[in-house]
Image (tube, rainbow, N blue to C red):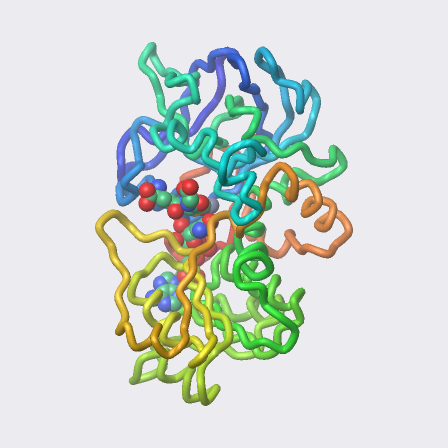
Length: 369
Ligand code: NAD
Ligand code: AHE
Ligand code: ZN
């Protein structure tokens, strides 16, 4: 079938809106009509050419919501008409990782996903007869996409797809990192570096966890108002200080902050976040994605004296078993999604979403088909 899609033909170039060909779903696959998709910084990161797994031409996008159109042979957990969110972290329930009870990092389709192909080693997308790569197992920048059955969460048909698409990545990542990775407890102090969609979701999660002081840190002071609305108590722009921000935070708190979160993808800020953590028990959670060749560093003494460095992918959330419940939480108002949606636009204007993100003017743009 034909599908309108925003294709990344080349690194560093705008997406092009073209009509691609989408092949029918094969065994274990599902054809989904995407109705809405958010644009996450990770899409911009891959488009920039800094992603070691970045492939071109590709259909990017991984924060979508849609409806099942057709299922391939053997698919039993979803049927045409079901409302779904595609998952870049699959959940097969059978692999070592799913069975461990320790992680959400299912490996069932991860290897082929990273190569931009379906689990059988081929692509369902083509343009003018040439294959186009899939992305993160989702490719939500196409009106019709094909994903693995294990990469779909079935959600309430009553949910607003223009809002719950954000649970496909940003909001789930931030809230999940607070509850599943850091396990923030009432009264704990929290510092959030980077106040985009991810950082603001961390703040929302920290407030749900009844954290005490919540420090919001960004070089763009325009982000502070929304951070305050989500529950941040202290606002810091590193540019306002003539000393490292970790020193500022340690001086403000005596021994450092219980939980710090890096939500930017900057290895220098990752160091600052680790060194802002409390002596003896503070932990720093890396959420931001850094480019190929980037490495983190600190004095080992920082770890010897009790600080812990951790990472979090998709907030540690198991998509098929936990995301439907988070959608229900959002429908009840226990997770707020609407404040994240600063812009909406049709697919034709998707490059505006990238521009607004780079200009620091948006939190989330939601593209509709
Ligand atoms: P975003 O661009 O919306 O927000 C980033 C924020 O960081 C902006 O407000 C920007 O002003 C701020 N910032 C930039 N440089 C800074 C600095 N030096 N000091 C302080 N603030 C600074 O991005 P986003 O969509 O919120 O994504 C954030 C990061 O999280 C990206 O690296 C993205 O790839 C990553 N991410 C990771 C996961 C995961 O599962 N681990 C999921 C989603 C996104
Ligand atoms: N392709 C990159 C890795 C990118 C990365 O770390 N992705 C995050 C999700 S970002 C969503 O916006 C993640 O979940 N990672 C775990 C995984 O399995 O990909 C690279 O460096 O190769
Ligand atoms: Zn994302």
